[in-house]
Length: 78
Image (cartoon, rainbow, N blue to C red):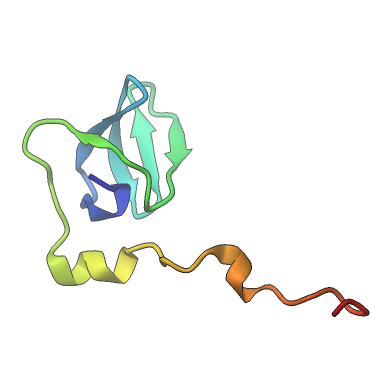
């Protein structure tokens, strides 16, 4: 599943470590060290996943438009 789909308090595994989601873009590990996660990061839920409602999750879904799509040529370039 993707990180944005988890509700705060949801527990998951990422790269062999266990985390708890504490904010919409942050989770803490067992040592209580904070880590920033992008919404589209694939994570493995631990146990029954604590999920956002479908409507709330849609608000946090990462854009499918690549970030470079909004860039324009540098001045003097065409």
